[in-house]
Image 1 (spheres, one colour):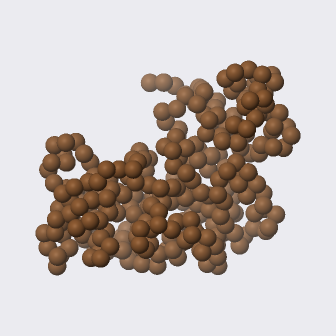
Image 2: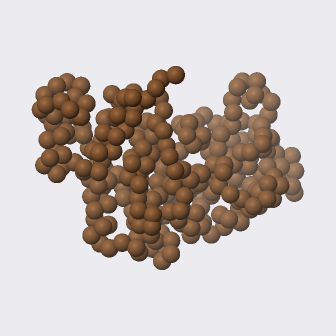
Image 3: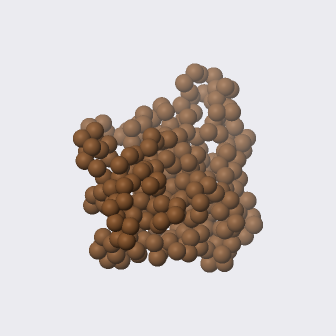
Length: 292
């Protein structure tokens, strides 16, 4: 039987099948021998041990389209990062870190600002201006008013999406609106593994419908960029590309060099000062990071 791993914990893998629900599976020893670790998001084949108890063995892992390191997941089509539009106000530095991290892993990212009921049109346009102008899809939603759900369903449709955001932004509330059975599903798995009440400590996939899955990842409050040199950072600020050809020096860092096309564009209001300030902050952090 074919399925997709939606959660892995303590050597058990929970495999969602289109027609028969979720099976609790162990991975065959051959995977250990070949040093292949099943990942959440893997498309697999399972042999059924007990249809009544819905248990089985994973016998084949299909080839992966991609494999993310953070969060550890396979076959992701896109990321959706959720921040509150207000209460708490968006931490743009944290958001830009996430966008750079997903850029590193070549995953296209959309941005959703929840709690849109707390801000006016002008503030919405300001937020859209910062990130929409550099090519990111920006959505607004309100879990409280159940607004923006149609747009979210549209962007998630027939894809596997990793959903992330800091704590307190209403991420879980939105997920529960997108899939009202989500709490029930996770509770059912928790009962099987006798871990008591579910909290988002482990990455898991939630089935919405058809081939639409979302991965709920633990809330993040800080994020360190790993495996990146400071010189590489500018390539993840996509709006710089248009103006780099105007820089006087090849390999311009866009920090202090004279005749910098990017800083010129910044002065002309073509690049968001919020984005540029975060770039400088991250650049300095990477440059002065101790190498162990």
